[in-house]
Image (cartoon, rainbow, N blue to C red):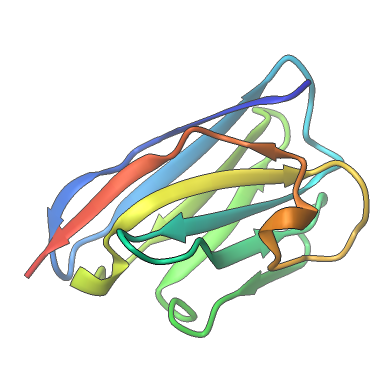
Length: 125
């Protein structure tokens, strides 16, 4: 089993940047598709960004395109989400996920096998 642990969340003002980290343990995720999702209070979990196992391909939701960047360091077994120009509507719990099978950069939560516990990001205006 893979264990994923997110870190880097916090309370920030609009316009600043944060970098989230997702560290994997127990097994390597270097050959897994990895993604970030988020869930705001009262809303469903939504896709943020995904990255291929090599890091050569990425996808992102339209709401974060141009502001958020997903990347990974397979040597450190870690996936990152660089978030720039944060907005109040980015406030949510952010979850890291890894997909053991398949190579598609899926935006569907039920296609991911492993999840972290989440890290809170709160953006104040």
